[in-house]
Length: 169
Ligand SMILES: [Ca+2]
Image 1 (cartoon, protein in one colour):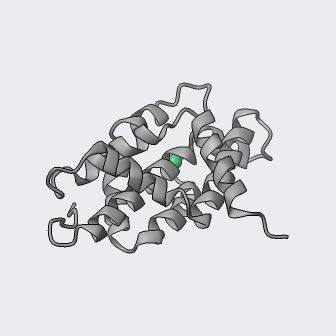
Image 2 (cartoon, protein in one colour):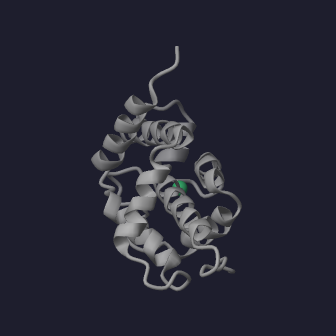
């Protein structure tokens, strides 16, 4: 059975929204990544690029899988020891980052640099998702949001080839 892409997209968008992440939040991250490289870029262009990333099936699959694991960990429903690892966002786990790489890949290799950079700086919504308030689990979501922003930024860079530059760490 193959599920219609449209259904997947609606579910993925709803899940992001229900976990407190808006399109504008992700658009802000894209703007942060590209404002110094694409002159006169607007937030609206950044959000449009996020919309475009959110049409891709590999992105839907990653959102559905990662957020599901966050929710199960929040409810204490994962098997030990994964429950503790995900609930506590254990530093050596790494599968959250690896899962999100499937999104970064969508628009080529510039995405990797953007992804690494934004994960290090954690601007905007990424700082909120990393707050570890003891109630909400966003172990997978933070990487997914960073990856969507990195992919959307790469997409913009490809569409402005003469003006944009790769971000070098
Ligand atoms: Ca994470």
